[in-house]
Length: 296
Image 1: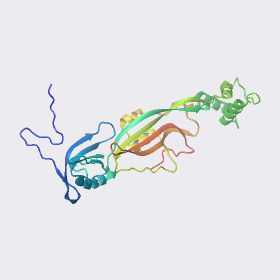
Image 2: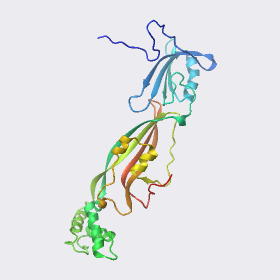
Image 3: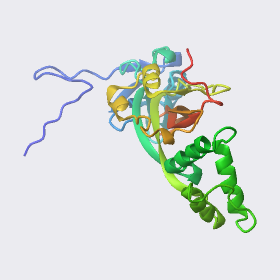
Image 4: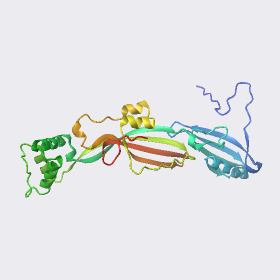
């Protein structure tokens, strides 16, 4: 079976002479040529292009000033009669035929991908929905002055010293309270639960550092508002979890919403790119601490 290859750099037709390599001129008029270039865009990190140039060491050293100013990362090999340079650029604004052309880094369109992750953590036994339901029934049954906090405080006190501290209410009327006392007495105060986080990874060129200034007080957002403000694609919006239907899973003073829990940038040396990671976590966040869907 035969394999036919063609150059993506200099496509030619049959009978047409192959074009000559472009002769580049650096500072001081020193000349060098482009040997090859390689495009990469299939690994989810965004477009980056690797060029190889050949010329005298003086020409490549002089040209390195332009490469650095354009956001390139270079390495020069000076072994042999000619020196060779490998230069890597990243970003959507690169002109492959003129990579050192000045561009506005703030106009750059990033390459974006999304990841959903499940985090596992320990939650208090008092957060169990059927326990919360009994706490509400306790407050409504005992009437004026009784609160859910009284229910939890009595259980915690009895669990710490069950010999001397007994529940002050009927165990037959509130059977879960007695079971909680037994578990607290043997050191079991939590259960494993999980929550979902959504991460957006954006890849830019090295010229765009994207410094992130976190707000003094973070806000929480409903899924609809968060998606609209950040332009999430429809496929991501479909996968975003919804608030639970059971009202006992929403403690008083909280709302199921998204809180940004990470916003960081890092430099990927290999591809000369800046990668920004933004993570939002979905949980019942306390409205005492976080504003909910504040206006822009």
